[in-house]
Image (cartoon, rainbow over all chains, first blue to last red; front, side):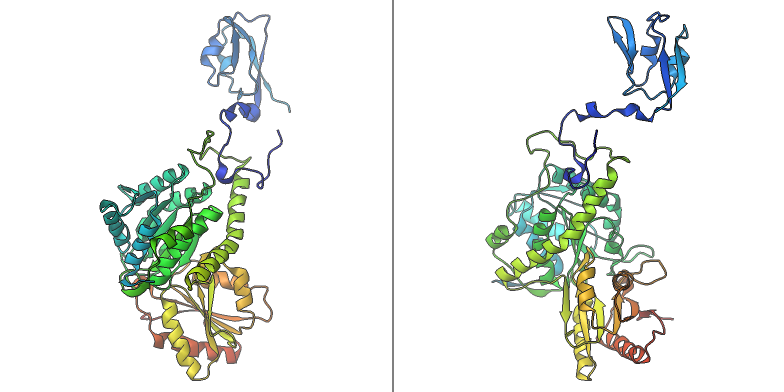
Length: 93
Length: 389
């Protein structure tokens, strides 16, 4: 997303669009990244319960992936996973 | 035009009545109490339609003002000294949110030691907050400047404070020409703000603004300050044209052939004019620059006005605690750094805690300045007037 310069931003730092938090990807300061092994996952959803950022994606009671746009890489999911199918790796950008 | 005997506080309250702001939130403090006290009686008597909010502190007063302003209201308050200091963090928020609030301020020293009388320390403590600052010389100036301030603030979307010297102006009576209510209303026009919470589409005011946008928003504020001098000038010109009086950003008194300039702000300017007349009678080519606006700092106007000066005597009613002197001195000298040929400067701090300054004292420092001008060197760049050693 190209950021606007000072001449084009609304006066006074206001936000003129409702729901704009949707456009704000907060996962960009992650230094470690959780890697999920889909084959060995039992979908116990312990990671879903513990994730402080609602970044475990679930559909029909099954884990479907990780929301990397918002995951901060805290590693709680990897720590709590009882079958150890989430591993933390260094983030490479 | 009706002429009434009014104190500075009464004159400011009268201007507020005629402006009839949507919201006034305030907390009392000497010597500014009367402004909102008188205004509160206007509210009780049904002379204004203002929603008056008595708060439990100045911090709350200005916070309520910011909220009301964001809601699209025309907002005013009054305060002084410790009250303005307690407002300090919210002053920055008002500026950053570009809320065009107008404060009727009365200059009073800051504690400690505790003192209720005039110096400029309080407003000088807020000079970096992003507020336009206008310093009135007398009650008439205060009355007219408050009316102008509404137009200015609501054009450039910067909060504005108009201040008078505590007790010297705030409590002294003077003949003040009062405009008709309709003239004031026509001059200020309908309220304008950069945005409003009731403007239709939903907006967010005051969201977190980190490394990626904060700098741009502060740059907007700097730009508003940069360009506001044009607005200040235009509003004053219109006021002058309509009502026959006005206040230039810097007022020049007998400067035309002067190579020695005295600079001052507020009520001292009147005293300085008499001292200058006395010195003129002795053949000294001295003039006065009255700074009517301190924020934004009128550096271009000063460069022009001081272009022929050889010596400048600055009268500062506060200190910067930089060990370099008062704010007028520090900033004026910085503004003229590139000016050639070199101008000699002497700064005098005077009148702290309300100590009087008289004609003779100003005449004496003008004489000292004349000597230094002839010698081509400044013995003491920073000195004091009326201080016991």
